Length: 268
Image (cartoon, rainbow, N blue to C red; front, side):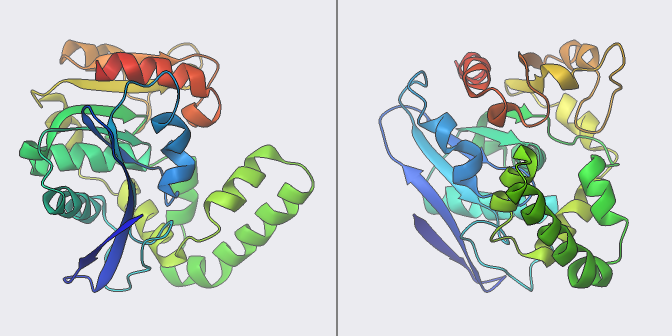
């Protein structure tokens, strides 16, 4: 694990650098998730071509600091990723983001095009509104969520995990080290995204792939949503579309091999 001190926020951001020959792939995790839980099985999968992998814990999650002075917007998270890439003297990386990480990846490509040569977004939010989870969080005031709702939610997850609920077991582990203030800020930022973000993403000229879980793909009973846009609109703007079979939003957690197969195609 490496650390980079960010003086403007008086905090250390931490990341894993799995060095190897080949392209640099930067992995950005989902809503307040630790990077290794989200992406280590992907980066080290036997099918994956050799590459240097950077797995970044966003401020407020994983082993990165709980920075009280940081505002936990997607734009500011993108700045912290840029700081790491500048520190490592990395240009033109392949950037892979899942969910919240996908939104951060898009903003990184928009703000620092020199850092991103190829962009892969796994159901990242590209319009305001958020997903069901972020909407529930953002519906509370910060004080109410941090002081009352999060402790109650955390206790409920542990109780359900003990009873054998697979999703609760996963979330109780993923959010074991989370900073509740940061989790709230992340959710609020996703719900209140810039309405112009989608058009800015569609007009990028670098290679882009948007990855859906099969169960999230709009059509039939599944509607277009902030993290599952119209695939036809994406294709019309030159965005490649990948679909992970037998998976929903969680993608690599639900079908690791299927996600890796789609990711390899996107990267190569």
